[in-house]
Length: 146
Image (cartoon, rainbow, N blue to C red):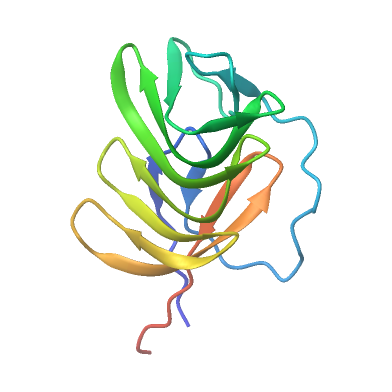
């Protein structure tokens, strides 16, 4: 079995890196995430803060954090660099959703869970998300012929 390890685009939710799946479980409680406020002051988890970034949120806000179905659009220097679409709880994507990176790469699937990571070239790879202290990691392990 060969492991594909390549770097994909940077999502402000996480760095999307294909790595071998780990046997251990991610922690159930995420300690100390960074936060960014949308246009109304509602907070979104922001594990990779960048200079000159801001977000716009189209969904609800509960207890000061993103909640429910919506679209979170990420901007840096006034340009769209990513979009997270789906169901949010406590400021983070949860359940089923889609992350679209600035280069057009996408992950569609569960948070946590399995889904499909599609590269800008159109190549679709089976993948899974794992919760980490810094956000979501997308892992992909692929068997190839010997």
